[in-house]
Length: 163
Length: 186
Image 1 (cartoon, rainbow over the protein chains, first blue to last red):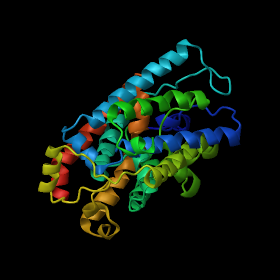
Image 2 (image 1 turned 180 degrees about the horizontal axis):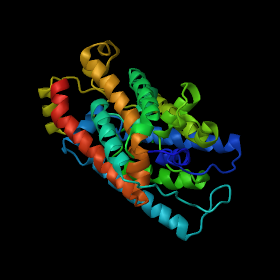
Image 3 (image 1 turned 120 degrees about the vertical axis):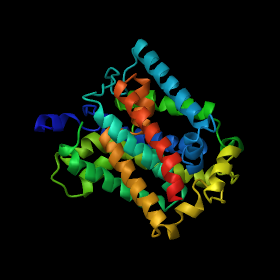
């Protein structure tokens, strides 16, 4: 299913941005700081809590839905405002959001179902997994190791999976 | 100030703060919020493989993302050291009752100690929760090209149809697992 050219193109949707020139040291420190803040939010909003995820999947509280809804609205609104105001990146490039490729859509359904099952079992998605380990729930290191094996397995099986 | 920050943050504060990560990362360098790509970067860096999926410039493409991930870990550490109030989560009573029925009695901490302590790992249940659960997180996010951050926040905010399909599938998978699989496992 995947030609070499396509293999190069369909990398994870999250990292599809072309790498642009950036000053290594100072620029990387910004991402460390933003991650630090993100980690604190994940803990203090209890998004990392196995119990909260159960509450969400049992439709028994607005908490997680409120976070996702207001998060998406804030992100959409602020990006629209940035674009309208003509704000550039710190490096002076215009703001651009890389589009994701739909393809047949099957990868989003099948991959999504698999991830959703793992999310409900462990109560953690990738960000919270890291925050939990930092928070001191060290057994999550085992879940992280299993996740790495999962991604590695996907990489090996990818040519045979429907996308 | 610290006292206020140490209490659990309500959704209407936390949600917008998470949403702001998207414009901040764009301004920082046209980066799209996302975490799960780091699994791929780490695989490309340390696990030997000839698969095309892992043959790319992980430092150039993923360097920022790995720093972001390290930041999340340190943020979690900081929250436990400086912003912890030690009060158990105010869980919905219906959830508490449902989980009690599944045999969970310890509601302190972020994860139930009965399921996720180190001593549980080598039980069959632990093997499924830690091993299969973790595997599915890594496999599913790589296959779907994103997780709750990349698709759920950044993707939906950009009105991406792929992200909408992915997020709906996340929830279908999670709902089915919670209501049909977990009762068998726990």
